[in-house]
Structure formats: structure tokens, C-alpha cells
Image 1 (cartoon, rainbow, N blue to C red):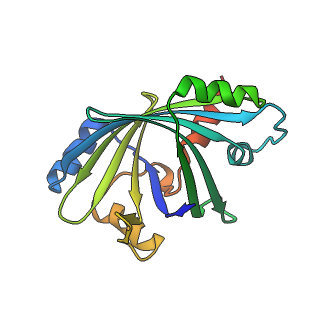
Image 2: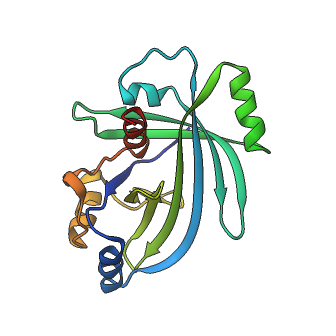
Length: 192
């Protein structure tokens, strides 16, 4: 499994204001990509806590941009501290040929679709940092900052990563640096 930390925040502003913040700090759009994820869970899952439910999920992912159409199965393993902050995480991926066949395979071994996350990602960078701005299910705006880039450690720890958001005055909802997009979506699905 590939291990790498990241910080994900929910932005507490409009798209227009976020664009102004990024432009005023010399960020340029360098990539756009869509991640369409289907979270599959075992039919007999008895967990009631969202994070425990999500720990048992396998993700069927389709990554699409103008140059690629990648289909894969992804399993993420995350460790949390007492405050439910992610302290470490890893993932393993396996290429597949068809999202439909991957779904059918998991349904055949007693899994079902739990949630879907459609994530339109715009990657912005300046001379110092790269942000993945994520527009999730046309409801939420997140920014993700990864600790490593191209296999190299960029930030020594989570605190130095948090300071990047502060440096650029990114308005963060609830001052939460460890937003879990899937948990937000699952909670919204459960309450609808």
C-alpha cells in the first residue's frame, strides 16, 4: 500500500471569491479531471458509525479527463486520532476494464452501492504549492493538499501543511483540516 498524508478542507466562501484568492496569489490552473467514485459495502455490514462503515468500503473509480479514462478498484486504509483527524493513510489500487463489470463482480460477492461521489477537480499551482480544488456532487467545495508529490516529501508534517492554508488566507469551514468527503456524503445520504 502506498502511504501518504493529506489535508482536506471545506472552503467557506463562494467559487468566485476562491478564484480571486487564488489569482491574487499567482495560482494558475494546470489540470482538470473528474473522479467518479462508487463506494461499495458488504451487504452484512453492521457498523453504525460513519467512519467504521467507510473503513469497510471498496471504491470503484473512473478517472476522466481529455487524455485519460482510467477505471480502477481502490481500497483506502485510514487511521484516526481521538479527534477523528486522519493521522495516517494508505491505499492500494487495481486497474479494471469496466466499471459496470466491477460493480457486478462486487454485487456477486454480496456488496452493494452505498454512496456515489462525483468530484470535478481543478489543480492550481504557483511557485510554492499545488492545491486540488474539488467540486463534489455540485454541493461542496474542498481543497486538498498532499504531503508528497511525485514520491518526494514536500511538507515535513501536518502542521506545516496547515500553515499553507493560513498563509494564503483560505477561508476554511469550521477550521477543520481533516474533512472526510465520503463521511459528509454518507451523512447527507442517511439524513435524506
